[in-house]
Length: 354
Image 1 (tube, one colour):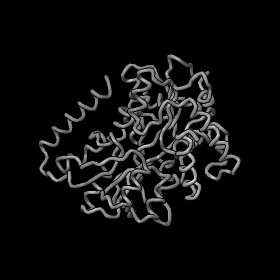
Image 2 (tube, rainbow, N blue to C red):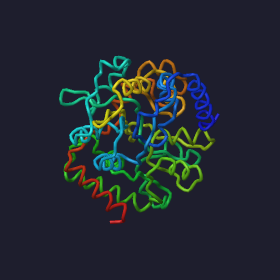
Image 3 (spheres, rainbow, N blue to C red):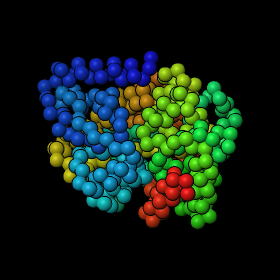
Image 4 (tube, rainbow, N blue to C red):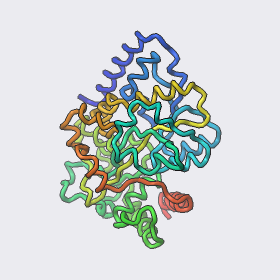
């Protein structure tokens, strides 16, 4: 069964629930999110309560989202990752989370709820929702798991066969792992920082395109336009479910990144708090977690979701022992603002060929 079919079936089921619900103002809630997260499999309980799903607006990456929010765009909830939460809070965009109103807060994985960017300044600022990996995704009919490595990205034999993300914060983790600087990250020395940039410049020689939407990477790997790309779990699941031989490199010795993303309550939210927390509770319900594991290949913040999900998939995606997995992978973390600005500037130069 393809993921597309699964989504259609889920939409139909949720539509049936909506038809019988009494309320019809669920769309008053606005969520500013990554494309695809409007999937009603994530918030079925909200639809049961309000009769319909929330309204969605989309961003391509967190840089775009931050700029749009600072320019006055309004939403009730948004979905950044933990390494930018403090930046958003410092800019006055967020209001703290009242964890006493979260039905599943005590069920969250300890390794997730303690990640940098969830709590700071004596307040909770994010409700963790999904987590997973950024890693090297490759055509498994072209490479074996034994031979694949990050260093292959610079091999001239693969000119125009590589795709990297357009966002600097994701690309830097690739460079950090490839150059062995993970023990220093995010406090990179100047020498380490330059080594990361040099590696990304070398990879640039082989890059066919920088993706801004994961579907671009999906399609290029499926067609054979590229053979390797730095991407998210979702790409691996999409390819495999559509019969494309693909795999993510999950050898922590070779290099894999773990990330945690979640929902934040926007400062200018104009719907009742009760409605916001109903959505947060729907998102963190174990049923939502079961769905995201089985249909997207991402992990969920609720520990109970792993008992409900298909055990074969939990094992295949490396989520059977989250604590061990966290210990072995590099986490995306907040960067010093000056280093972040410099990194973004340098990455734009690299993408332009300088």
